[in-house]
Length: 421
Image (cartoon, rainbow, N blue to C red):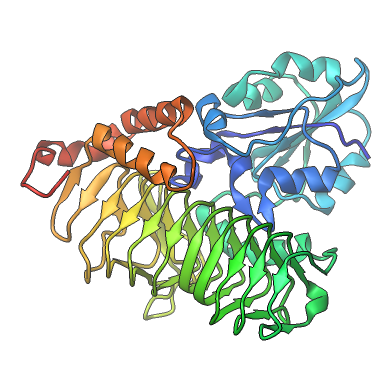
């Protein structure tokens, strides 16, 4: 099987907003890791390159190592759309002869070609997809699945967790208190430096559980598998199940079937279900998502300027990076909250669609002053021992400018009453 590869991001990233507002598609949490790591594990090697929006790549702190020895001129390599899920489709596609461009649902999901033909496309970033399309490779239809919509992450994540953790090597490299309860310890891995306190429960009967290095599970926390908890995360009481949790999160209360990109805070009670939470999000006490309509019907989600029927009844919220909610915030089914927004109308349902960089106080929506936002973002990052780097600031400023039309109805109120930004 050909293993040398280039991962790329196609134009479909826009439909995944706000998840992709600041990060490239390969960085998005899914299964036991992220999309880039899943492809690395599937193919067994680091990518030669990752081609995506340059500002998003610069803002990705955990970007994997790229490069290695260049393939020989005649050596065949793969180009893989990071939004495509690994599977048997690739094995079947590789059984075909010679170079090919693989498509699913009208989108390029991959290509097989000699390195000498691919090499001129390296470094083109978001233009790499167009480069592939212009090569004139024979087109072949394949049955690949694509993460085309934000709710696909929620719908398919539990299966991805089970697939990724199927070969789990059980081990206790950290500390599990004798009074902690572990159901099916043969499906549990506790990383080095991790700690599971007395009266905590690891329930792997429904699927494996992985606690990364330095994870803390406090008393009266129930972790239900399948579940992958990233390094340095603290679970502070409550129930966390069937979820992917990135590094350095602080989570309490009830979390069900969610993906957390990383470095987010939910230190208090409240229910977050069937949702995707971006980096640096802070959820105030009792912040709660609705993830099921009263009529049990399919949920509609705001995507690229319109509402789209998800076709599924269990969808919570999609929160971009740096979103903050005040105490008692209520997020409606299928909510989409743009990066950098601040919601503090406690006890009321927030709007279903919140543009990037606004404040909402329960009655009014006003534009968030960018300089004040950047100052707050720097403070939040400092609380995790990190800093707002020039690359982070550049990505945020670029996003602020790109989303200005969404805030146009609110700009006149930006110098509004005292207490607003």
